[in-house]
Image (tube, chains in turn red, purple):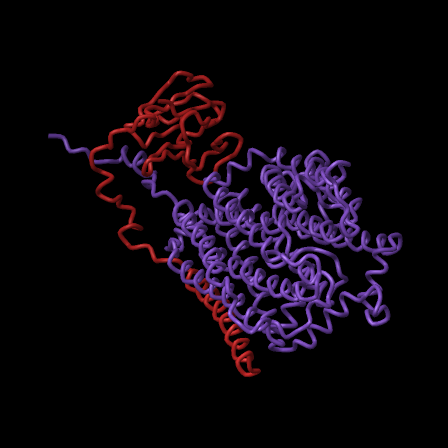
Length: 156
Length: 466
């Protein structure tokens, strides 16, 4: 193999290496700001299909929210009426008589097939398991959600 | 903060196409290097190029398909970077193997073994992505993984399975396989630190007394993590593994700093490191010798500084564009296949390739920190920072050591050097990072906005009565 061929091979390989690195950087650059959200999605108007008939719940999916511990133990609310507001206020779907619960404390909402609990800026926070949530958090069957001294669960 | 993405009016795209494009280039790097090795050393395209290339392509495609299936929003750059580094490492090992074989060195199947380990690594990568659908599940194992990490570190001391190789007691030998449990312990301890710090960071940052210029946290807050850290450091020092103890120390410091947002920790850590280094220099002969070799390598050549000096000769001879794969003498450097693989690359592919590789590592760390920035939960943030810090420190220590910037300490170059435990652990680290980034980049669930005004406005509504 001639000296020149080997030199060209070496150069070609170094070129490929740098093309790879520069492409990676250019992907990072174009990834920096992601994609613009279309106005319709940002306007807050929910997509029409979500207003349609509520989907038939799949087998094994939760049907109601139950207070399992605290003053209002046994209180339940059907998930079909979601979003469910939890708090001391009169408009809450689950009205709690708990001093550590805010008027509009948290809510349980559906997105796709999953259920989320979202804190509404309560004073004492909403906990999923041991962790205070800062963003809508998925909850499954039997996951304990604590607001104030009250514990709620999704049940079948 | 949690809504940064949506407030700025964008969502992250999936970018799986971009990942595929980069992966094709990464494969070109890996397979191209393999072909160039054959051409340079033997003068012919290697006979098994198709089989080898097919195997590598199969692994990468499997990893890519897994990411498409179970982590569609994950970062598009991490996997290609890792694939390119791993492919290049395999080719360089193959190049060393050919020379070792020609010289009659007993061990000359590093590339083949590394490919086996890479296969295992990719399988674990896929398994991790499939089994772990939400990284927050790991938070439940804070203490378990801390204990497991320490147990793994202690394993090499057990009489039956522990092995002392090259002066460091960091190996275990089970059923004919040598393994470095410390590589896995690293990941375990990152999970443990992250899980602990995310719960206690407020207490650590705010409660406590102010001493001179830093706020010392209360003992009961710092205690558990300090114990975890102290034990692992002690074990490493007893094992005579300087590189790893440096790594763990830096990792602990970085995570503490990020969790508490107190720069004072860096000052304290720096002083502690300075004190520790001074004590080690004074009392441990080994450390003193390493410093001496670092400062005056030529005084000890050919002798104790044979390895670093040969590496420097090699890199110097390689120059800007290298001698070409197969035209150097990297085998003169002892352990060219593990700790000193970068000197092989520097000799045969030159500074140009070394810079590209360092840049690749830089990009991996950048992506890890970026994932930490956009992650919505504290645990994910801390874990990404910890994993990124491991990469940054490890690459700095080993590249700095090989190039003579800092005293030499033995650590593997992630994904490049020969070493099964390191390769497998690093593939799992990348799986964890991809999992966190998938969660972070996934658009926040679109929930109906809370109509706060609705309740209030009811009282002032004009009600039409008919």
